Length: 178
Image (cartoon, rainbow, N blue to C red):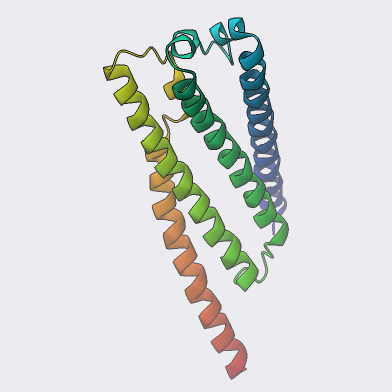
């Protein structure tokens, strides 16, 4: 690998580490804020980066918990997705990239992106229904407004996983004929 490509490869890894740490911190902050808001309801006015669910908390604690659980689950899944991507960087051998381990990790990444997409779309629909019923959900959509992007990424990753499976077959066939 050339120095330029190696630099880009390392840069992508650093960016993935930063995103992973960011989502871990976000998930931890969200969990802490939820637990804290159960004991101090005044905290529902500014839960995380301006998120105000105080009206939702006063109307229904169970719906408040549902919305907050969706936020936490999506954030945690995104953190774990980037953890698996970092595992891919560690496993991937550039000189011989087609291996069962790499294919398995790419398939796992595909499933996690699909999970994030589905949960995001379901959460968006739930919050839309709550808004129609008069619940004020604030700016909660920003936690899952990228469900469509994750769905598109799932389709792309599915194609890449398929290519890797074919690559493994061709590589094994090539190894047998040599």
